[in-house]
Figure: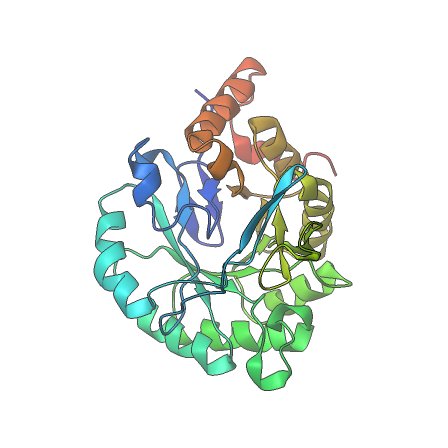
Length: 302
């Protein structure tokens, strides 16, 4: 069998597949279908300092080759997650990546301080797609200075590997990637969802109660692949790619574009067994071509 082990910014994983934040909760649902120890890692649902109810419904809509979501970071808050969800995840041999989100700078610092003291957490994935409520609602990740300041605060507050999750809703993804690298990020993950909407023509109103939502799924894959390529060329730290991956071939495209690991998201909804299937397909693809290690293919298309 091929060697699927990868190291991403100090994070060691048995294979490069991570379930994307917000698509597998805290692992309990998927654990009913397969052993979570098969995963390279699991990025848990976006967690905030205090509990959030999220946005009003409807907040999910199907689109051609994808889906829109406007869940709004519904979660029980970091203390509850650490008390009730982390013990469950610790029983599995997989990297636990805590996705953290905030709406002001200090939220990120305080979260990093709390999480850095918890055994079992392998890395922090910093969601900088959140609106900065103190600066007019612009997402932290839309501005290189704001993105850098957030990552600097997290970096100073923890010794855990720090992964900056980048928004695609920017003019120059390479500029943002360079800013978070300079601020101390150990890796970047991209792309987060793209901003989109749908309209209910019978009601003549936006289908989502929040009007706009995040578009994910195969529809965004070409854009995601392009941005991963650009980010990987712009920085020296590892890149984790995501956006519409449903098969091993999709994953290999991201790896050859420069990603050291990849995340699957929307695929978990239409095929809850997608993760173990993709891992098996990836191993078979490498074996058939007598490729010893998946790491040998990172950036192979350059």
